[in-house]
Image (cartoon, rainbow, N blue to C red; front, side, top):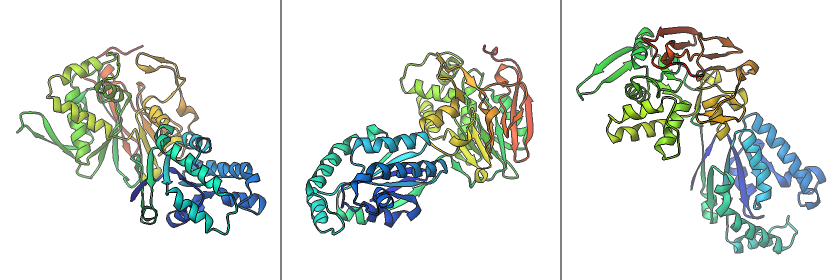
Length: 424
């Protein structure tokens, strides 16, 4: 069995006593990554079989797990984990630190588990305990997905366990090996003409291809620079479809990266048939997309779904997200991380468009990475605690702005006109 584990995972080994969890852990993980309940029982009482210190052992396990997750270290919980209550507290830790919980289930037949127990000289408890653990395990397996496990692998034979191959995968947000240089472009909102002017001003070479009867472009930079789009490509502006075409093409050819904004997120919910109030510019997107063949909508859907809500570049020195990203969330994955990337820090109050009370997270930012974001229009980009908002409200008659990285140079072009009156 091939097992893929995200690099920032809290791995749950789940199985009865004697199923081979500890042996499996030693084979596939570093000793420092494994937190064993038996080991911590021994640390407390000099006897790993001493069930009277189970509570203290798990307090230590949870404490060390929390410190490892805070430091962004993959962690393995080596315990039976066959009961929901035992898993719940660790799942809460994964949620708190924006780690992905992964279940590796060693679900051997009961007769094998009992035989192994009989042959162990280091375990002196009744077989009824193994039977109860096995029953709990059978009840647990079907519910693991509903508990929030992001990946679940069930191994049911000794052969599957012995032949398992584990590969660690970087999260989609991990672009640390991409060092730039970059040109990061703020909220576009369908302002295609201004986008083309800005891209040319940044030194990109644009070759037009009209052989298909449509506007198609090849965009490259003679010095290998790449564009990063900060989301909100859609809604409000006059030429939303060409903006999408260009962003999708540049991303596909490797000349750009793109994060989605809250407007793309809302468009995806509309495409999925969810109840979405058509306002705040969504009506322009839907109307303009009517002119395109149905396959275009599916292309847009696949494009947006394939994007990470934020990216970490240049060995962790640069973070980009539509609405920003707190230090403790950078490079991590959870619903909370995604929500922050779309909306920033909010109070929880909402209106028809989404969260409406925003807090100034950047004023309290003390992270090492530079964070570049947009979402909330500002008259001029302004640095604050190594963060910068470059949404200068082009669609509202302001400017379309880019930040050159690592130079920290601001490049802007004025809007040709006011396409929509500022909101609020």
